[in-house]
Image: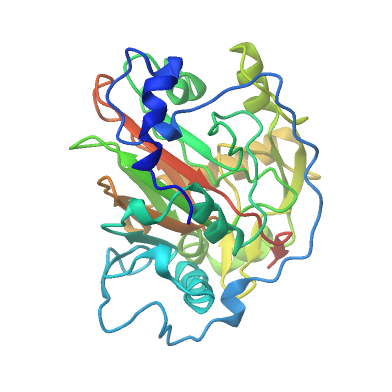
Amino acid sequence: MAPSVAELKGDEATNPALTGKPKLSHPFYYPYFDVKEQFPPTQLFEHNDPGARADPAKPHLLTANTTTRDISPYIGTEITGVQISQLSKEGLDELALFAAERKVLLFRDQDFKDIGPERQIEIAKHFGPIQRHPTSGNVKGYPEFHVVYRDPEHDVFRDYRGRDRASGVSWHSDISYEKQPPSTTFFFILDQPGVGGDTLFLSQVEAYKRLSPEFQKRLEGLRAVHSAVQQAEFSEQRGGPVRREPVETEHPLVRKHPVTGEKALYVNEGFTRRIVGFKKEESDLILNFLFNHVAKGADFQIRATYAPGTVVVWDNRVTAHSATVDFDNTVLRHAVRLTPQAEVPIPA
């Protein structure tokens, strides 16, 4: 069995980086940066979505012991009575389908003693090869983990979005610049403020549906450039790692989910830079409209609230999200993400 987080707490005594830090519930996952660490370019691969194998009734996931509560009609379901670490392959297939249908799933009261790093990685790999982030902190010896960490001395995400911004909201879909961006994504909440530090999520499917049929037709067939350059430059300026040459990739503005067939907008202000074939003014006009459209869509957004032991699962193909940095910087927030990659986006 993989070592439990409880068994790994001894790292706190031997890891000099933790000296003087707030008391971490899971010090094993403290962010690790090695500027010499290098990853090869990501390679194209054949992807078979596990949701396509799932029983639509989801008998291995939604058992008699399971309770669900939809957060909104369009996006988000809270689930209790399921331990992700105990799901069979059939249950994980059904999880992929349920995440595609409901966009975001919040699994409460997960027992992290049964889900150490190897089991976490094993589960995530069921959904595709795990992206190794080119610039973020990872876990020493486990580069598959993307570490989200904020304490009084470390607030890299605030620096990234800009300290002179009036709002900390920054909508994005994770690593959308990859040739094969992610699908079913896992976010493990380790330490969390008592109030605040939530995540905003929105349905890109419903955002697309709200547009007029004529405008929808004009967006379909267009392609946009998603770029990792700004992210890499920011890390380099801070003396951080750039483990892989930053890529720029064209994706359809409207993509189709391979299992549900739903059409979704696929633009986000975090990584989408320009529409292919358009002049700058034309591209900016359309992209800024779409960015504004999704940002103002409170009726197809949710605010996902967390507690330690929550595992959040979402489908990056049909959602966008933003952190909410609404808690004092003396409060610790700590989580880790595993980001399996999926198919090359399918045009609508």
